[in-house]
Amino acid sequence: MRRHLDDGRTRPDQTPLEEPRRGPASAGPARLAPVAGRVPARPQVSARTGAAAGPAGAAGVDATADRADTADIAADQDLDQGQSGGGPGRGPAGGRDDGQLLAMIDGVPDYDYVAHTATLRGVVRQRLVTRALREHLPAAPARIVDVGGGTGVQALALARLGYDVTICEPDERMVDEATRAFATAPKEIRDRIRLVQCGAFEVADRVGTGFDATLCHGVIMFVPETEALLRALVRLTRPGGTISIVGKNGPGLALRAGLQGRWRDVLTQLAENGDGAGNGALPPEPVVLGPAPANSADDPSLIRSVLVAEGAEPLAWYGIRTFTDHLADEPPTADLDDIVQAEWVAGTLDPYRQVARLVHLVHRRQP
Image (tube, rainbow, N blue to C red):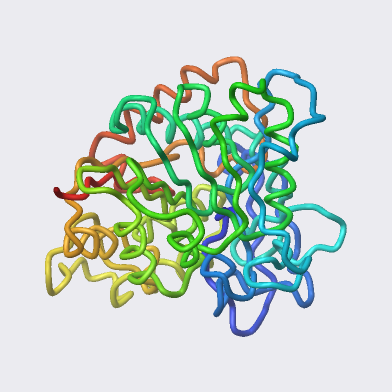
């Protein structure tokens, strides 16, 4: 959901962000300058909860999907046909009026997210998440709910593996993109996907509970009610079912800025983790994955502790994009398989996963 390319840090003085330096460290075009009236990366109210929409995101259209007749796509959906653009969770994503879905880069609306999913970073993320899910999901067929499933990349991948997937997505533009994505898939794949327009806290009322697996990828950083969202995800899952959450790794957020040569941003983000004194002191209490960031939604330790308190035991956690996160909008290259394999291995090993941009937490609801 929405995609979460931001560092999640709003600048009170709205001064222009430091431009990444050119050369091997930046590996991509300069970011756009801040756009007036489009700054908040951290909405006070989130579309994910069924309230006013903010920056949203999930995945993009699967470019490898097979072509198929689109005439019956409407019959394969279950959409809430409420007021267009006005009801809960139906605002535009990213503040653009031209139909593009914007991501956020350090608080600045920048990338069209659908286009981003075709970049190296976007492809790496989705392939790593799918690979981890195959390690932990119950065997197909199984019922999966994807909370904030966005434009349906993960749903299509899982449907092709034989799973029945319900996507709950509040953002109208994401729903439209998902509709187009599903239209390119064979009917037997579409028949395994149900698309419902609703916010995260409306899912149980709209589609029920007792799912074999609950996914919530790239959403939690945009939902102010972090703990309430986590509890809702547990309640959606049957005893013994799998819970999969992807969020930002707060303790490692400064790495991208450093690799791009944005040193003022590095100092700002480092200061927001811990006391910023740089004295190497240990935190007063041990944490699971690293020093706690200022924003609780970016704290993997908090996410884990809430899930455990709600009766969901940890199975595994992975880092996502240790080596490629700073590469801006570079397209995939011929060595993509090697890149994905390197990121996969690094995402399972310390210290590499500790500094990855994203973390993927997998839990199981206890019987």
